[in-house]
Length: 138
Image 1 (cartoon, helix red, strand yellow):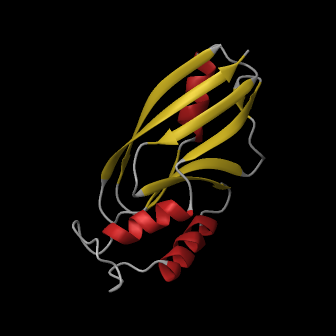
Image 2 (tube, helix red, strand yellow; image 1 turned 45 degrees about the horizontal axis):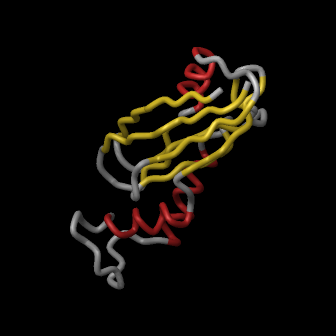
């Protein structure tokens, strides 16, 4: 069995936005109890991560590290059409990922106890992001 859903996420700018509850809700409404869920993000300036969900300082520390690694307004960047965070957002998304595959067990994402799926917005201002969730299994 195959199922596919379109998801939308509105962001307030740079940061992480948890997707796990919405994905689990889609899984519960569908028919797959055992299989795989693939989440794909249709953008080049945000990414998807599986990260610690208990302590938000983990995601804050990731943002701090990424800000040191890929600086907004780096003078080496030629692509600045949409501002100083434009090219840095593209680099950040390339260093992370735009798709994740997670097992489905008993109709839910089979994540670890402290894991959740997050959209990581790399732009400094609000965006509406589109994702496709594809589920395959029994």
